[in-house]
Length: 135
Image (cartoon, rainbow, N blue to C red; front, side, top):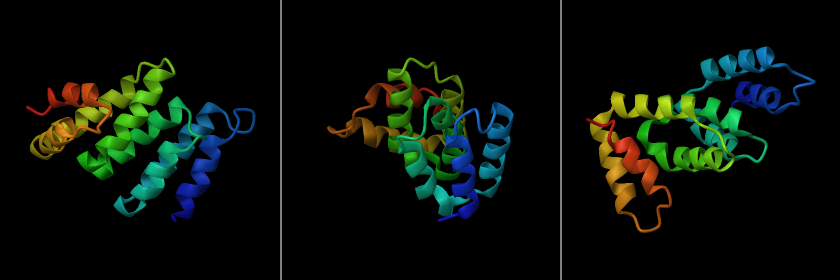
């Protein structure tokens, strides 16, 4: 476990009375700068954590998209759907997904098509939407 990431997550998960928005954004920058591909399981665990709200899930979508690429689309789509279910627009989250598709269109398209064809995959509408950015 990356202790820097663990420490920064605690700041992100803290109450706003303990750490204000500026402090949390600075913490996120430190987390993002410390994260490597090796840390993806820790980031995914944080993304799925009940401690993470819509804002933290949206923040975490950036390093996960950049480091994990299209390999982590199922987890990203699950978090995206949670945010939609909670009534959030996901503008930043969607931006990072489209950047992912733009940066590796062939690999992303291949993974999206595999997900769409899977009978158990719950987020086909998100996959079909992202597929449009793989051109």
